[in-house]
Length: 363
Ligand code: GN1
Ligand code: MG
Image 1 (cartoon, rainbow, N blue to C red):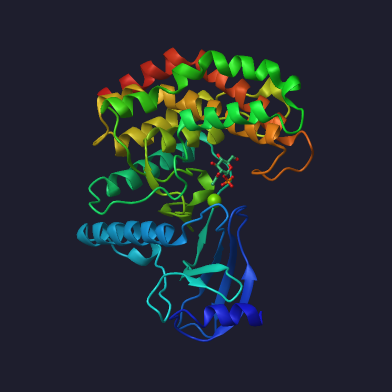
Image 2 (cartoon, protein in one colour):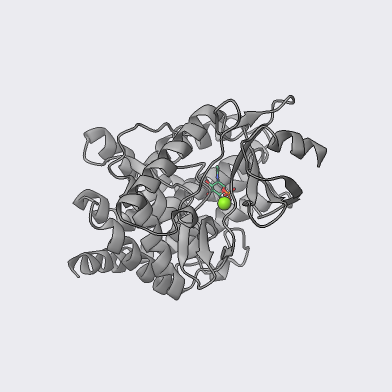
């Protein structure tokens, strides 16, 4: 507690600290709820930033400040009420920064706590529409951002790089695990060229990078007491990427019939109703700025993300589980097989998805 009080005292908050307690279930950053005495001053969120994953904290915070300021201006211009519930507000330190490095080299940031909100863990056909609309809207608000943003994890969703990392892991075979995953490697190899299409389109100049959220999970949105979305949270991965990141990665988790680490392989597969509902919501808001190259490749994005995640989990398995937290030795292997099966099932829906996107765009 004393430690936290020292950290909090570096930030220009209103009121006196009453308590500090853990909140949320994020795996990357440590998040705490700071209450203040009385009802006249807000509560706060205190977060320790994981600088092993996000190595350039200055760039990370620059991105977040730029994005929240831009969204705030947009909401003001639209005459929105209640903006402090619809956009995160970060607090400056007495040195005028939005983060603080303590004596032990740990990085911290603070934002105003938005009361009477909740997060959701389940995607259903009803809220999937709203998820699509919200993430599409988020991209839409940032489409005219002039200030360049950096990549907080360079080449985060670059498929060519992820495949190179897999090849390097296979070559080193540090744990002697490669022989047991030859079947997965073989299947991945068959689709490797096809899945690197986005990078080729980008080099040709036909596919843009835009500011994307890059961690589009249902639990990265805040809902109010009536179940309406207030805002998007967890902005660490906001960076230039292909829109496929937001669209494809949401469906990878939100539309899988089972969790990404389930070994109930029979059940892995794409929930078509979630796909349709999310796509309608997303195109309803993002359809206004997406190019035909982007919309034409949305079905590819639905396949790309399970494929990429299969590659990433398998790489980590071969490397000896150094990136993703595991609960048992084969955890990454199970995740990898699950994602490969999802990839296969998504490919069975190629045609349905293409027809649905086309039809929705005409509405
Ligand atoms: C990581 O920690 P979490 O679950 O939000 C990863 C994502 C992966 C996901 C797979 C920074 O996200 O890219 O899709 O695991 N985030 C980072 O579960 O690598
Ligand atoms: Mg999160």
